Amino acid sequence: MGDKWRFIEFNIGIFLMSTSAVLGRYILASSTVVVFWRCLIGAICLIFITRMMRDSFRFNWIRHGRILFISSVLMAVHWVTYFYSLDFSNVSIALLTLYTFPAMTALMEPLWYRYRIPGKDLVLAGVVIIAVLIISPPLKEGSNIVLAIILGLFSAFCYSLRNILLVSITTKYPGSTLMMYQLVFMTLLLLPFSLMIEVDYREFQWIAVLFLGILTTAAAHTLFLRGLSYYTASTASLFATIVPVYAITWGYLFLREIPRLNTLIGGVLIVGVVFVKALERK
View (cartoon, helix red, strand yellow):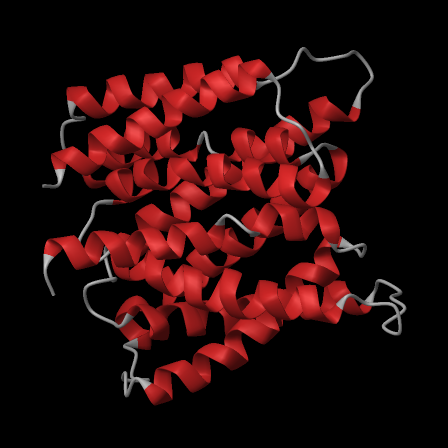
């Protein structure tokens, strides 16, 4: 597969991932329950996709089982805290706080794998941080915004660490297989918590949850994991910084959340980072 098609495929996954924020705000149910159904539906979908694509279900549990389990726990915490961040704020704040994760990854990955941090990645990570600071609204004392930002930052940390861990095994297994097993683990982890929460399933927004599970989760994250097999976690994360731009657009179109001028300025900086990384790959 050529580099051009890999870049297109990876960005289709990123585009689909961008719908999670607007769906998280739209679905009126407990974040833990929503994430549980997201994982369950995504896992079932990926079992069929893996079989249809004739990808192998084989996995070396002795060598790589611990990495898969730990990364699944991190991914579950990432999704739950991210959805609660959406509950306490809006699409712009939750997404742009979460998307400090590329900057975190650019700094953490070299330390984890013990190689020198590229100077360009340090600069680009700095630009992303500046963009998020520009976009973030003034904090009001006693507001839920503070909690939303803390949850978003913790979600970003978990997602960064998960991607860094998985890079070591993404070349050994198909992306659909890895994501399928992750979603199965996450479903089992979240099952007891979801059973503790009372839900009226007669009013549950099943169409939106199905979209979230099938396209936003199964399709998008499989393509993202495939990207980790030919990009470093840092590069893949910096590409993914365009997600907030997409998500803010979805928020405006479907939720009428109008972005402020500072949000647009920060968005331009983020697109610039993605463009620089794209040119670097040509």
